[in-house]
Amino acid sequence: DSTTPAGSCDAVVVGAGIAGLYAVHRLRERGLTVRAFEAGSGPGGVWYWNRYPGARCDVESVDYSYSFSDELQQDWDWSEKYATQPEILRYLEHVADRFDLRRSFQFDTRVTSATLDEQALRWTVRTDRGEQVSARFLLTAVGPLSNANTPAFDGLDTFGGEVHHTATWPHEGVDFTGKRVGVIGTGSSGIQSIPLIAEQAERLFVFQRTANYSIPAGNTRLDDATRAAHKADYPERRRLSWESGGGSPHRTHPKKTLDVTARERDTAYEERWKLGGVLFSKTFPDQLTDLAANHTAREFWERKVRAVIDDPAIAELLVPNDHAMGAKRIVTDSGYYETYNRGNVELVNLKADPIVGMDATGVNTTGAHYELDAIVLATGFDAMTGSLDKLEIVGRGGQTLKDKWTAGPETYLGLGVDGFPNFFNVNGPGATGVLANMVLHSELHVDWIADAIAYLDDHGGDGIEAEPEAVAEWVDKCRTLAEKSLLNTANSWYLGANIPGRPRVFMPFAGGFSTYREIITGIAESGYKGFAIR
Ligand code: NA7
Image (cartoon, rainbow, N blue to C red):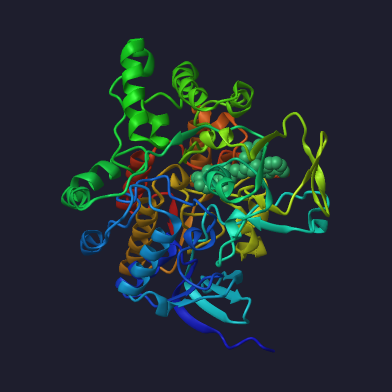
């Protein structure tokens, strides 16, 4: 038996992304012994894996950074308004070193299962290296967008050229010089990488199934004066972020979209457009709840976008015609639409001619054969639950989390699952996570969990477990909120609609970041109402 004897600790943390790193820091600060595992060879999570050209965050760097240490936020200098993947990775590596987090992590190690001991209320965690660890608490910080989705294209494995998924990009980079490249997918990953691949490749074919809404980033380099101003303004910036709907200091227009004149509306959109980025879809407070309001933003967007595309027939294909603006996460780009004015770029409309499959020399659609040297899969993720499914998490009665969630994920506050005591999932279904600034959301979750553990210890408790009634109520609340939102109306990864066979359930809590924060904080202050404490 190659299995080493069971080590024992207070908490096991899975994942060295933004949430996992902070979880290790916070729990250790609380005096807990922590063992942490990460499949990658270093910290960074999503920023470790997604190394495709053009990968960038769509939240401003000054906001997409930890708030827990003022020294850290004062010391770190961001070079651009929207940081690139390499810069965010450097930042996370810096955090790992600065707070001496690496010593708690074992890298290149995948957790394969976690099994509850119902009597002892402990988790036995096993890894693909044969370790076995027993812990009181299990924290999964595996990332809502970490399980790459490779569609089952017929003949993909017979393709003779290179195939790269944006989410598992080679560390040494890819040189497309002189190559005929096909990019499949026009979500964030496709839209960010397409302009850069187009500059390098001899020819680029973009295979688009659903057109997306993208907004120019208006990215800039940050000068010393701007950085100093940001740093001086941090207390206020963070205060506004914690009190906001999405975890950044953005404030929507005080009035509803249709309560202002057409001219005021255009001025507001124009101002927001100049600032750049995804917050355009939150210019007015009701843009994601009222279709008529949404339509005005969409019209403004369409005018702007059509104006930069030379060929009206291409523009027609690039303007979405099947979902409201923001119902799928909109994209923040740099030069995306202009890329279609290049002579070496061709847009392939998969709505008219779907992909039939690949063969040795390229991609076949129902309309044509595309001869290629390389295929880039920018086909997204089996989001929210995909990575949890890969872990065998076995709760009471031998039931796995995957089986419990066959009809869709069900949680209490996104933080507890009945039948799975002392298990906390960070930034997953039932929480605002993916609809907010993930860094602040990670801090919110981890602080909440650390406080819950402290509460247990202060009250001599062994276990904390969501009550089934509380789960049912929360699931209902999440559904009701989603039904009021346009977010519920597109075939997005928020609903698992991008993955064949997934139940169509809106997974995040759609009530807004500050509301979510108030709710979970209130529950903690109430002595963990809805949780059974043993
Ligand atoms: P997304 O946003 O899920 O985009 C994936 C893209 O791949 C999208 O355009 C899909 O079209 C397309 N896709 C997926 N499967 C297929 C098949 N079988 N055939 C053709 N096209 C396909 O993933 P990203 O990685 O770009 O971004 C994920 C998140 O990361 C993003 O929302 C940001 O929050 C950051 P579809 O729309 O399904 O028709």
